[in-house]
Image (cartoon, rainbow, N blue to C red; front, side, top):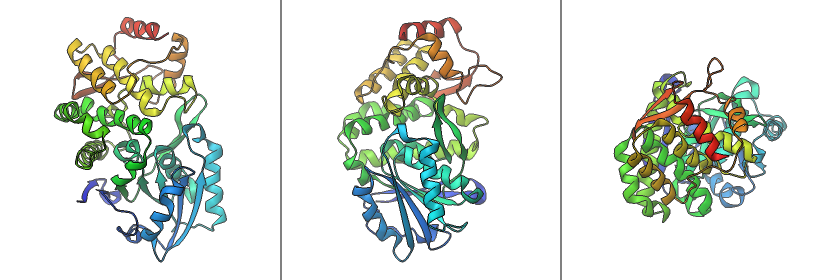
Amino acid sequence: MTSTLTVDLGDRSYPIVIGRALLDGNFDLAPYLRSADCLVVTNETVAPLYLERLLPNLQGLTVSSVCLPDGESYKTVATLQTILDALVDSGANRDTTVIALGGGVVGDMAGFAAACYLRGVAFLQVPTTLLAQVDSSVGGKTGVNHEKGKNLIGAFHQPSLVLIDTDTLQTLAPREFSAGLAEVIKYGAICDAEFFGWLESNMRALLDKEPAALAYAIHRCCELKADVVAEDERESGRRAILNFGHTFGHAIENSQGYGKWLHGEAVAAGMVMAAELSGISAGEQERLSDLIASAGLPTAPPQIAPEHWLESMGMDKKVQNKQLRFVLLHAIGDAYVTSDYDERRLQGLLGAAD
């Protein structure tokens, strides 16, 4: 069964199509392209699995492709140049559509290249990892990392379509799948207590990749994100709650070297830290920590010196007037953004993580 959601952005609205067996020509992408010309951006892991299976969805079109190295460590300006070179070499014009086939790194870089090339061309997202399907493919955030911080270079550039074939998750490595579950848990934690409870009851089914459980979790996460993005596209207000756990998580990724901790693993530990900084009840902190652990994710950060924490968090995109802001919880299912946090509790958290 296929379901369709809409990210409501007026004349830039677009569908999120979720279902099984959508590759192999079973979903025609041509109506979502501006012309018959497209460039598929993928990576060395995904290409052997799904590039040939995507081509029947593009039958009758002129298709070029570029294959990138795999991993967060390659989410750089240098790799972005590879995509831009491929666009130039293929003779791409403003009617060309970029298609991202892969996980969050591929989607972020392909989208950023589309935003930059000729000051903006269309792009589609065909995410193949759980993290990309439930989070990064929706909402138009694109970019690359800088050695001083994650996603510091980028643009808001919305796709024309997000096509989610949940069958691609069957080939996803267990560690990558668990990393995606961190973002799934995040949605329950920040804005849907009922969904959080469903996850507590259904984590085993998700880990076993049961199709019905996967379909529901992906649909609910995309639904929640679409609502937030429609309300606050450029993160001037409520959209910042989607960064729960990310202030700590991005600092972990940066301090360890991109790719050593997967994004979802870092966010998982970051959510536990953010919950403690929030001062919510011990029982709710335990529920969050237990759910994260049940997904096979870390609940504590690596050892990082307090000064390195503060240096990395100082580059966080939520910082305003040189002041740290955190996404905290009033309770499970109720997040807020604030610069009014317990400084002593923060220092205790950073000291304990050292």
